Image (cartoon, rainbow, N blue to C red; front, side, top):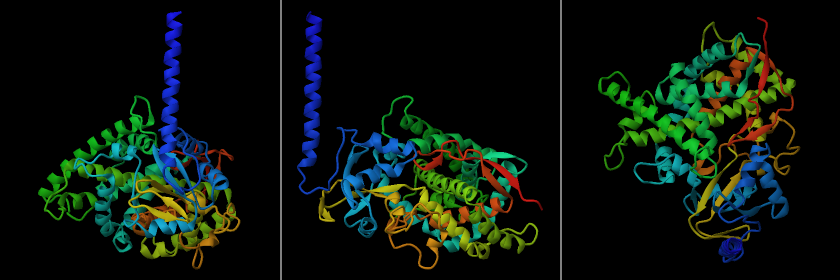
Amino acid sequence: MELFFLSGVILFAFIVSISVVFLLYHKSYASHPNLPRGKMGLPFIGESLEYLSTGRKGHPEKFIYDRMAKFSSEVFKTSIFGEPVVVMCNKAGNKFLYSNENKLVTAWWPSSVNKIFPSSLQTSSNEESKKMRKMLPNFMKPEALQRYIGIMDTIARRHFEAGWEGKQEVTVFPLAKNYTFWLACRLFLSIEDPKHVAKFADPFTVLASGILTIPIDLPGTPFNRAIKASKVIKKELRAIIKQRKIDLAENKASPTQDILSHMLLASDENGQFMTEMDIADKILGLLIGGHDTASAAVTFVVKYLAELPEIYNEVLKEQMEIAKSKKPGELLNWDDIQKMRYSWNVACEVMRLAPPLQGAFREAINDFVFAGFSIPKGWKLYWSANSTHRNPEYFPEPEKFDPSRFEGNGPLPYSYVPFGGGPRMCPGKEYARLEILVFMHNVVKRFNWEKLIPDEKIIVNPMPIPAKGLPVRLIPHIA
């Protein structure tokens, strides 16, 4: 009887505690007047589970569209990753965020990102990102990338010879990851040995899957696995960094050969050089950004070209004209890339329908008003690519695949945002364009293909990928 009574008291206390937390949670948000409409979900968790679940079920846009329909087509509030968030849903919202960078808003990442990419200098990921963005333009601007096109084509040829040729069936997404990761390793670290590149492959997959998850560091959770994977990768990176320092000292490596050499030799305004740990963190971030989104993009290029033979034929025609203009063994060059206009329009339409970057976060650094609603300082903001990419106001018949949308002046400003926009537009946009087009050239001049799973489900984790990796049957061209 006493045990029963004690259990009842404990249960009552638990219910009261939860109720108090719940009331305080909602009261804290109610204290701000004139917030956008929306719901905040459960204490601490908010609506994170539903946000992540819709992506894993293959419909990341559903979380956004459901709330746009219920609350507002412009802006609504929610709570994800333990933070109050205002979601911007139209091109006016995109323009506002991109135009007010470092004035009203600044970049923000969920705590999971800071924990996976800790800085030994105890500065935030935001500060580290600013430093990287100052460093990257010299390597990522078109005139600098022109010299890499031949290297990209060489690696693409080796990739298709090793992974595609002589096979009747292949699974596209793992191969796409191999291709883009091999390129990133070669251009950022001067590593091109497939066996050395393969050392990173599996832990990188684990890391990418755990970056945007609920940061619960318990054995078996995606977040815990991501932290372990980042440690494995950084250990390997530190070994590469140590060897490069020796090679630079002995003039066996060039100071300008890649981003790694530049990082080792560059100092800040105080004459301080980056530590090996900091360089490893930054290279890790670059490798993630340099290959994960592009691998998703080229996978969906293959998917849509399999589904749309008339589009495939036009891409093939353009690419074969370029191939026929080359001497035997001659590599692609900048002029060839400029001729791939239709192919790039196709790639852009692919990224409209399946944006590799679903969106990104900002943080309000001042109180401000948007669309008549008050946005408090410290609240997070999120722009969503899907909310504009499939909006019929900006893209008539939004579910139709139509590369002509990108002819002439193209889409309305701020409506097409696969690379973000404003000061924080992805610095690797031109790099991504080159690796996607080099892939398209090499795949269509070798093969046609058929999907083996016609209605394969798409999941988002954190980028859109076919659930089974997009297995296809290859149909080699007859010489």
